[in-house]
Image (cartoon, rainbow, N blue to C red; front, side, top):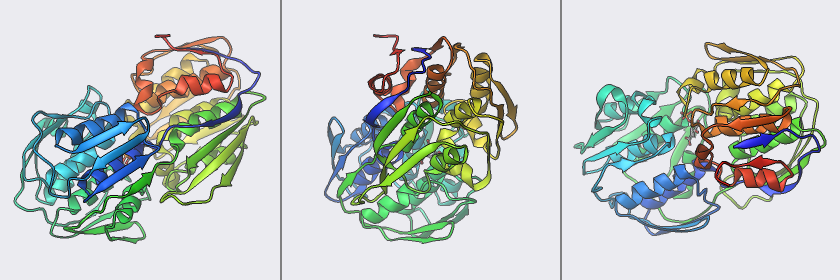
Length: 432
Ligand code: S3P
């Protein structure tokens, strides 16, 4: 992918594709429900399509037309033994959440993913699931994972060592199959889409402070789910409009769940001119239109409980920081090392290549802003969020930027280049 820096501004109105986390969960709960579930605004990105494929492999009828998906629920006990290993591609959410569901099945299964997935830690889910009675085998707790039928799962009371919605959700989903209460307590609030959606499907969830509990077995009822735009995708447009002079962009119908909206607060604290216009909310998740205008940014510190509220947006926050005045410090974010790539190393490497002053910390990074980056060749490491973060940097840098392995972008944001072009940017994909 090639990007040319420009400064005549991004302008116009746009929408981003559906929320990835919510799209995954809608398919999963729809499959386990009684009756039909209709999903609108579904993200037809590769990660969520992998979730659909896994449930089809377990006998669930799922049809899709664009961003509308119909799931014929199989019921909690209605999944069938897959004929082949389930394949999640690049999707950490699919493998970890599905593991919780597979743990409760009366049939054996194997689950695997691509080279990146095979390096990501699975002990964080396998260990507590085993405490519930699950039988999960693998070499070094890495994918591929083999799940054997367990006699009966039993609820546990589990304190998560790190705030992770994937681990929390996996345990709550296993809890649907368990005898007794499954309680998960987090060190800080992570995204709560599973809790919200379980409730929407009729499952009583008890939430108290940092603890969420579910008591199995339960019945889920199919329903309609309207998926809002993904704030993690909107984040790229927010930062692009802030750092490219003379920009004004409206992004419609973005999900602004509080556990996800840290990016807006941090960009505003950096001096970003961002207005959030609340929508009437008929959805289970809050939605807003967001207006963003070019702004003079200043450095900030991002740490503590804020981190889980913007974990996926840190790469693009680092780009905003490179165009800000002063120093930005990001701490308590060691989790970035075990995402689709080591995002701390990837950001520091790419920013340095573009002439920014950036350094790694054990649990984050430091960026001293300069407002003058130059184009460079960027190794995205096949990580969609790294590729898009540097595409944004390239739009505000001098000269030409090339992003390697652009084909990872549709994992979460199909049509990314088209949206940028619609707003006035000069972007060329390799295959065009
Ligand atoms: C996700 C949770 C987060 C996030 C990921 C999606 C989810 O991962 O980074 O992109 O949908 O539950 P962790 O649970 O590992 O923090």
